[in-house]
Length: 117
Image (cartoon, rainbow, N blue to C red):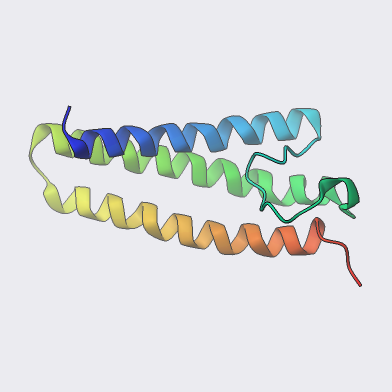
């Protein structure tokens, strides 16, 4: 296994973790502090955790699935040795997804989980 395949496998596992965490969050109605939440947020004082779960569940599922697909495409093209442009596009897509997801998650955390003054 070369380094690219290892990184692609890590990306796939990260996507699976996001999906797993989302399913647990949705089913239990509880947000885990060690999950996809910033460290500075006190969930015991969160004004609307249910609103956060409702807003972030589709985003988490979309991003987790898209990251897994991009990781699988990158791993496949790395193994086959063809379509290197597709591999580059896949890597850039993961980067863009993470940046957009981070912005959405920070906005949702501020709106639903941080105490308003």
